[in-house]
Image (cartoon, rainbow, N blue to C red; front, side, top):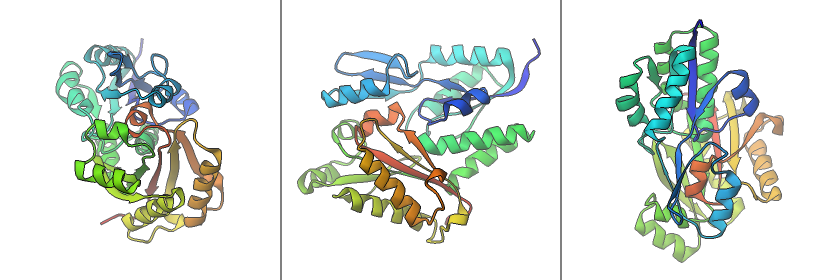
Length: 296
């Protein structure tokens, strides 16, 4: 069988459109999710454990942990890929959030030298935007070195921010300082996080409307307050299942109004990935934007 030139793999921390994935033959590598209460681990493949299962578990006070793809699962996926492709590009979750990047670089690449790994600084929608850039460059017959370099530089122009409705799991995971935990509990406020390499606590809000306003202001500030609609390449939102429809519509309309977008259709809508959901809990949501202008 003649091998194709370049294959692409993402992991399950990335959002995606199913048709796009199928049309472009992108493979998905499942991260690992552990149900701490039952001491059971699952591949995050959408079958072994689902978004609905996690939401139900969180509602019943279950605790989940996430970890890198099991080495055996990773090796098997690469074996399958290199039967079909000469080279493979892998887009993992941020190197600051998981050992996934280091595992790929230090263990898997030893077995498969033609594995090329993007040093990711994010996940979720940010990595979906990176994926689309990789596919476009492959179709334009760019060389792999240029594709990797361009994709890693792209993170400079991507900004991803989340609001967390329920903080119990993020506290247990140790992803928030104890001093901030005390303040959150005392003031009954909700934290806002920026995802850039790792999670960075960026502020607080009390009411849903004020949280959105703060998130949008932080996005604009990040791009030096010159974020006009003609500068925006892609913008999207993420939310969990069982999210209030009125909240979703309000968020979409505020984004449209704030950035003077011509239509709601330009806003990409995705479910928060399971590996993010386990930490942010039900009711969380995020905004991600990819813009033309360089940031300081």
